[in-house]
Image 1 (spheres, rainbow, N blue to C red):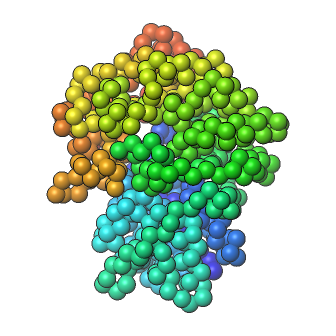
Image 2 (cartoon, helix red, strand yellow; image 1 turned 180 degrees about the vertical axis):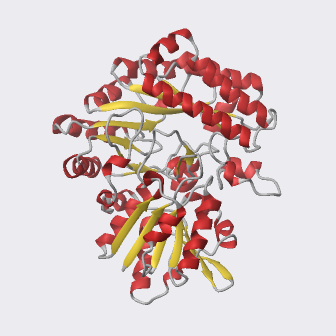
Length: 472
C-alpha cells in the first residue's frame, strides 16, 4: 500500500516542534528544527511490512497547506497520517478536513499526545477517521495490515475511530517494553533531507534519537509522563549504539540530540554506551536531557569522553514547597545542583536549565526564588516557561474547570490560567524579568557577546515571547 505521512506546516509567524513535551508540542526559536521522530518510526514499521511510504515535513520545508494537498497526487493514497500538537491542533484538524474534501475515500488519522489524551476534541471538530492513542508504531502498523487485507482497519487496539455518526474508543494498546523497543526498526531517516534539521548550539545537521521512554519522577505537569508512562523503559546500550553508528556511517551526521525525558536513569547503561562510543572513533557529538539528581562526576566524565557536549536539566522551581509538590523533588539540594553544573563545566559539557513560573499558588516572591536559583546555578543557558497543564496530567485534572482550556495557547510561553496567586500578566512579566535578570548581568553580557549568532537568536526568541504574550 501507499501511505502518506505529514508533519503539517506551522502556524503563521511561529515554529512549533510537535514532538516536544511528550508529543504535546512547544513553540521554539527559529534556529531549532527537529525531525518528526514519531512519524519516522511509523514509516520504518510500515516499510518493514512492505508498504511504500512518503513522508512530508511541512515544518522543515516551509510548506503551505496547499503544498500538502498537492502531495496527495492525482490518485490519493488510501491512508494519510498527520502529526499534531496542542498549540496547532485546530490548524492540523483544518488540514485534515481539506484532505478529506480532496480525497473522501482516504482514511485519515492523526498522531500526537493532544489527540491521544483528548480524542473527542478531534473527532467532534473535524472529519478525521481515527485518532491514534499512545505509542503509534504498532497501532498504525496493525491498522495498515487490516486495511491492506480488507479487514476492519478501525477496530484495532489503540484507536479512537469514527463509525458513521458514532465515535468508538477501542481498548488501549499496552506500552512497549524494553525488548520490544529494541525490536523496533530504526527510524526512516532517508525519507527526509538530512540538512533540514538543526539546533543553534551545534554546527551542521542533527538527528534525534530516543533511547528510552517514560519517567518515574512523575512531575504533576509533565507531558512525557502521560504520553510515555511512569515506568522507565530503556533500549539496550548495544541497540542504541547500532543506531548511532548508522546515523554516522549511513547518513553522514555526527550531531545527535537524545530525546529521552530521563536519559541517565540507568547509570550502568549510560556508562556502557559511553564506553562503546569512546572506543568507536565515530566522532559523535551529542546532548541529552536528564534530572540533576541522576548525575555525578564519574558519570559526567565518561559522557564527556564519549562525545557529550551538552546536558539539559529540568529544575523548574526555586521554591522548596513548589519543587516538592509539583516537581517531585527533581533536585537533591541547591548545593548538589550547583556541584553538578560545575562538574559539567569542568568536563567541557555545556548546561541548560529549564525553569517554570506560574504554579497555582505561586506568588511573585516565589517566582523571585526561581530567578535566584537560576542565577545561583548559572548554567550556560536557561529557558523560562509558563506552567502548562498538559491533558491528563495531575495538574490538568486539578486545574480544569467546567470549560475546556484554550489549547491554542499551550505554547509553553503563554500563561493559560493555571496560576491563582498571580495574574497571567504577572506570570508573563515574571518570565521576561527572569530572562533579563539572567542574561543582563555584566559577566553574562560579556560572555554572550563572544557568541553573537546565538545572542541574536536569543534576542529574536525574546521578542517572540513578548509577541506571544501580547497576542494572548
